[in-house]
Length: 126
Image (cartoon, rainbow, N blue to C red; front, side, top):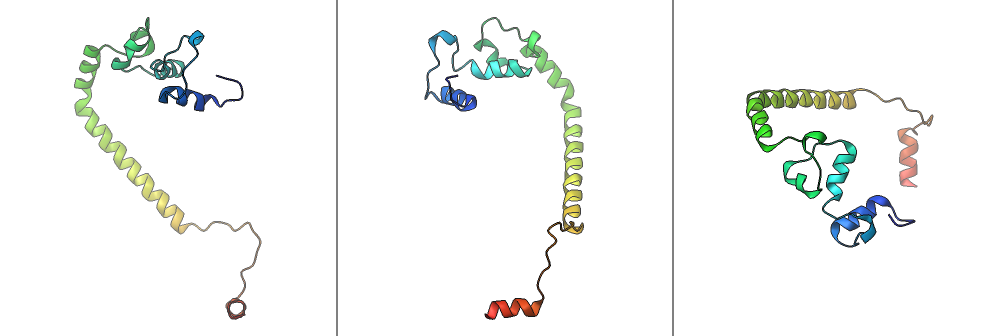
C-alpha cells in the first residue's frame, strides 16, 4: 500500500481496476478476496480455490464438491426447521425490542425544564 493512502480504499481501487498492483508485490486483483478469506480463516468457496496456486481446500476449511454435496444433502431436513426456529426467535426479539422502546421511559439527563403552555403560546404569538 502506498504511503499516506487508506489501505481499504487502495484494495478497492485494485479490485475495480482503477489502480494496478505493483509488479513486485506478486498480487493479482483476483487473488485479493481469497487472500482476505485465508487471513481471516474463512472457508474458501470451491469456485475460488483455483485462484491461488498451492492452496489446499481441506487445510483452510474448504471441502471438495462431493463432500459439500453430501453434507448439504444430509442437512436439508434440519435446515428448514433450524431456519424457521431462528426466524421465530428473531421475530420475537424484534417485538420485544419494539415494546421496550415504546413503553419504557428514558431518563432525561439534560436537567432542563419544558416551558408551560402559556409561555409557549406567548413565544409563538410574539
